[in-house]
Image (cartoon, rainbow, N blue to C red; front, side, top):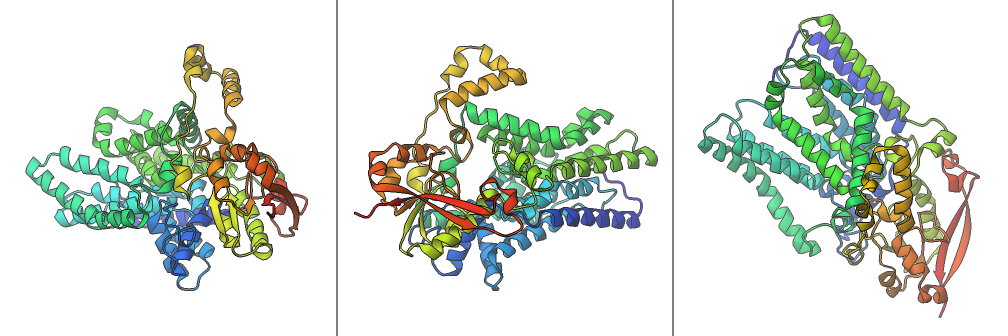
Length: 552
């Protein structure tokens, strides 16, 4: 890869601008936090309290795939720092560490990649959100940039393997990047095969020397090859691929505009061959996101781990820009791209309660970066506090929202969506997709918005929206009722009198449920600054609906 360096003072200015933009967006999103992050915090807290790496004391269930993130939060929490704050501080630390990687090394120039990353609101959004995407992006980016260095010796390949191991222990998708880098070392390059084989061996050794003992330990500890979310969310079908295609296309429509630089590269064939590694990683990961159905969380969460790689590729396109010999148009294009990126990012932030209520829709919320906590996290905190104060400590509660409610209540909970329950997660749920292919015109309907709406109505007549949402399709009402929970909270964190999910529906239709549970409604007063941002608490009164088991 070719870099062009002119003035070190110029680079300092670029670093200052990048840090300034990142701080601006971090300030915007400091109030955001996601409900799923509380699942991670529950594991970290139990680890600190000596209960082990568990969601519920005494039950060894691997309900989170971000082992290294859980351990680091627990380590910071050991210093008597609140775990929510610990997760935010770690997210910000890895955000700035990733950003600064664009400005390190002997060969530097205008690091447009760093400027674009700093002005992408999704990156700083998830630095504050409590989950691990930014930490994952750091290890993936560090590992990939180290691989792209020239004149590496065996020690660097070994270290590179360790870095990809950390990436895989942060998110399982790190295995994809390790595997593709492994293949590139072994089969690509001008070195003799003997040397390539030796380098591959050192790379694999660096990875396996940590990952293999870790994998053996977690198999012995949890008793399963894969974490619970793998079974709850895993697999694919035509519905997931439709969701995934929309997710990928919306990301490209929102942040893919810098790729227009490809049109101004003199010899794109030669360029693409030299950047085969980057292109293959970005393509493979995007295909993976398409296959699994994308994600429902805000801020394009699933693309955050590869944002640095994406902007590194954009930076390489910029360096190959045919007008690079003329400083004026080159700088003008760079500033235009950064300005547009900032504008697009800023436009994703709804301002005020009404704008947030309109923007945060379950089926498109991944295109939004709100300033306030996720609804389940915010409402769940109040619900969990209520449960802790008013319900007995030996209570068992069946919930769908497994984050803030269980975290703040500290009660024994059953995760009805299966993220923390192997029985529910491993239940096979089948979908009838034959009706989509009986009429070939159904596939053509995907090409127009009006026809897509018609097709959506056909699908929704057979399945609820939540059944098709990735990560929300599992449930087992019969199993939940067999556990005889003292309380059942249908729907979201604040509860509902009617079912949302497949498990809810099975419970709701059961004679056992109808005969042994009764609806209760409690009104919780909320007076903080955020309550107007959420429909259930907009009036300042939150209605908590749940079903209580009748006394026998």
